[in-house]
Image (cartoon, rainbow, N blue to C red; front, side, top):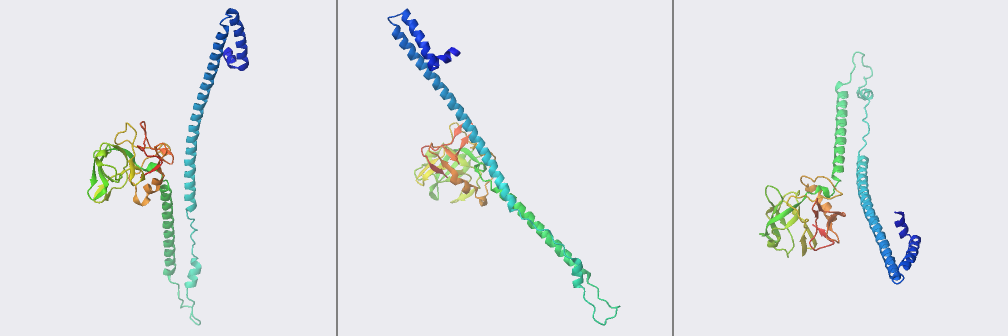
Length: 329
């Protein structure tokens, strides 16, 4: 091992070549120079090969370390966002002042009528007992209302903290196969599809896929659909999911395509945003409207949310067939 290292060291290689050259010239004076040139060339090639292998190993090591650091940074970022939301919720909690106990003695004395001048000691007007009890009832009622307001505000803040966690994990994105497609009877720009989602029955989906798309070309295609939207009527036809498309304009639209080997029902996930999706997205929360601007296709044609790729685990990434740097709708 030490001899090999010395061979690649400049000083060691020079000494070895000098000794080798002298020995070869003694053994074969005629072809000695050619043999020495061959050994020099072979030594240089071996040295370059060793340096190249070392640089490749170092590059792989750096890639692994960069991936680990990126993952750690994302985890710390998520923890920081959670702490900031909790701190904001705590700062909004109202601090109710302590209930003030009314001075019953002064109230009773103020409500007690003074006896008229010259009245006999036997005739005295006592305070009405209902006065103090009515004050107590009003005080209890006001304390109860303050407690209800405080409990209501606390529950509102807690629900606000839950709703503020809006990320792509709340979307139920799954792979579906288009079984049939036809033009909407009341709108030529819309297409009605029957889609196999890996469930007991197919879903009806109404969508706009551009003027150039032909219904017969969509049949049999795999697509990515948003499945936890609330069913709604579009021109009289109930749509039970949302078909995701990549588009630059209304005339340039493509289906978002899942990876090869995907089957109906496969879920699309995001590495940096784990979690289970909502059972059904509430329209008043506008989750889709908040997330949609960050759903994009990058320069490689890969669909992503804030830089995190659409992925079907074990099968690959979701892509646009030909478009790049465009939005997903």
